[in-house]
Length: 102
Length: 484
Image 1 (cartoon, helix red, strand yellow):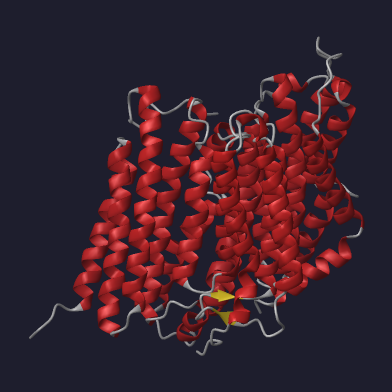
Image 2 (cartoon, chains in turn yellow, red; image 1 turned 135 degrees about the vertical axis):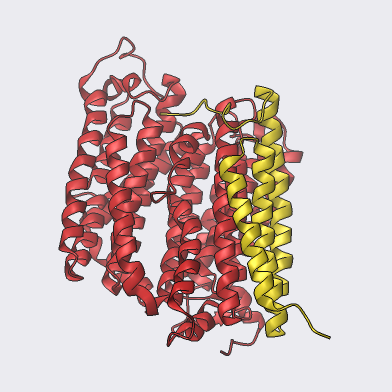
């Protein structure tokens, strides 16, 4: 059986990563920015599993588990902060979050 | 690469962190059991716990001479990790003492527990010798700090600081993670020392390696608040509870430097002719931008934020020198900066409790309201400005010396010019404190005992480091030697 070459996975991950970066830089909704960050984390995960398969070793796979765990912790903290902001401002548009500047 | 097999003796190497976990659990437990009135002691207990951890580290966790890789290569038990670990524990202790009477955070067990968690993460950042461990330690620290920055839920500014810190931190750490994944893809290794061996000899095309290097640098640049990843720091410093601002400005920055030094010098020594000049350029922009923008600030926390950006720039010169003296100078610089900035923030915390604002203009007459506090401010700000005989002078002296030794005379000259700009705005603040008067000159500023202890410890350290620098610099040189 012929399998998909690793370079395809890396190319896909580069595309996902770029989309994630663009999402963070261009979108103004804090939730969408947050989703884009998750997309970036998952593009890195894709590289890890693709190479773990190519090298036939476990380290890359294990790394992905840890990244997923960290991402879950980050979601918990991030959503808590977003909810706090929303309660105060009734908005999660990052352009409205501008009390601190100078 | 072979790793030392596990034996129970190895656990002694992380005994301080184990003790800190126990203290965090204890603080959380007592928070439930104790009535509100007794919870002031939680901060003192936390500070005591940090003291205990420092003692355990000194007695049981001294690094062996052969710097073994322990826990399957996850950590390296060496002088660099040990030096930074003591520094983090010390800053944790001071920040806990500075928190005991701070409104909104003082009587909350979870505040102290999360702070201890951040220190544990930093300790592992300094010791991490594997990409997996490094990423986990980095995130343990960062996530705890996001929580602490946004801790005052009733205060819009604090919540905003937390969210900004979080979004920017998560973004940069995702970029760094992508860099890690590429490094793994090039070599199939996650251990820093195996990676280094696999990258030697140019088996990986230089272009791809530089891309990975730049991606990795983004997250580290965020941690040390180097230009162009410094945007977050003034906003976060202003909005976060002031003890946490102090904590982020010293411990988190030093932890960023610990990983920056280790990763750059261990993994990428082969291509240092590319990243050395890059670090030099970043350091110039970081110093100049930090100092220039600090000139225009009216809020003391924002001023100290820009000043701390500039200070990171000086420390980067040590790395740009690419020598053991340079690294030793950077480590020593971070030590002097840590104690100095803690003194300065200690005064800001105490003063703002009574003055009720962080505007520099409201510091008028501080020298009449509390001569001791004004004196501590004088010591802190002059040391930040690099005046002898205070710690900051020797910090800068060794940095510039290392740059000149490495042939980077132009970089040292830019550094000195920047130090002069820096001195100007520090003196402007002191002018308000000492020469201006306010209508409230007769109202004294009370200094609780815990704060007096913290300020006294740090001010003494500033003076000791400035008058007897040699043994401390020797210790820093020793720590630096474990990277070469």
